[in-house]
Image (cartoon, rainbow, N blue to C red; front, side, top):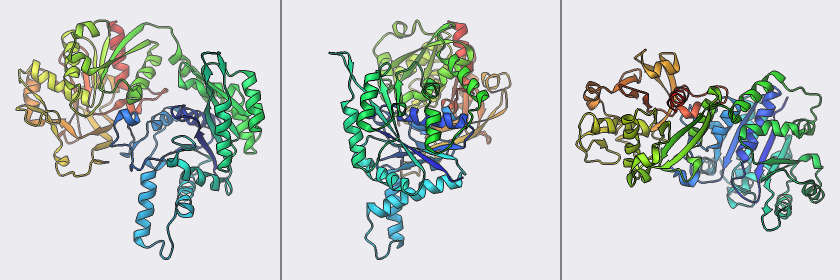
Length: 534
């Protein structure tokens, strides 16, 4: 059976949750036992998002194969419970770079290379090749940006052309605002957006309408009239407690049956066992029962929560598994450089320091780590959080005054954290860090690490240039710091632990592999310790 394609567009504004809608459609098709994978298009001319500031783009998500991709890939993986590859990511930079390379090799000799047909043909070939290579029933194609953007216009045109040759359904995610002055939902912006798509030669088969509350019947009727869509194809997507609720909410509106019928697929049965398992996991996450546990996340980019979306989701997964009602307290690390940490942290039951780059706010993170160690608060460090845990221990336990990372102080006498030797010759910034999935060996069976993973060899994803400096391993260990996991060749420290209490940090990013069905082991152990501490 040839693959079928579902193209998810967004109109009116960005940030409407196309990634969650795309993931929910994938989940529904997965519940019908179809083989489905995503493609995400981003119009920026960067090759990938690896060099972008989190304030610009949110979290950079890392795949097993070293791909640095859009944060929506984390949502895809968490909904599908599968690991994706970089072949699912298409960017403007990759497309234009590939076209230029072909032109230089002489593959277009005699032709003037243009957006249409050369670029649009390239896009269609990539999409169809992806479907064929993975033997897919469905491909969900999320188009980044907003309809009307210059950056994605050529990609939308390619999807229009694809629909002339293949079975393609278009889903437009739109916004129905409610004016506070009159308390009424308004459909006019969506009407204009729909006409814009029609002007591009595309008539969506579904409208998914983001609203703050249920969409009124009058709005649905009005949209049906102006778009010529049956009311059953105008789908409500209100704000919810958890994005994981959306698949069931779509099913409740018969979206699944109407979608399959659009592809002339009738009498298909959902896998009720898989659906019940999904419902149970979602209900555990949204449940307000259980002990309240407050976790402080001390970060550099907390003004934009999307910068730490995988940390948040990993905590939610662990909370559901442990039947804990979790409260995340987001703390800007610079605040701890100016205030008494006791005033900010005294009510929390555990502290996480996540990843990050650059000098700003580093001393505030170290202050938070010291507070956790001295007050016997459970602590979990992720990447930068491990490096700073080692720096704090070196300063305040080993008495190595001024200890630091050369990332923040190149002239420090005690360079506890230093750049990887393999990075010294690197000139290009993009795609050159220690990236992707790497195995580590847990050396101490009495460690928190082993009791969390319950096995000796584990694999986690990485994204960093700096490591614990082996020159200081001995003095750190003599003063009690435990290096409980390393790379297979023992050259790089992967996990460190305090000698007392619950304090663990990893050079990896275990949050990236956490799933609703399979929470990250270190997050489970950390939250369990925090629960006992609250």
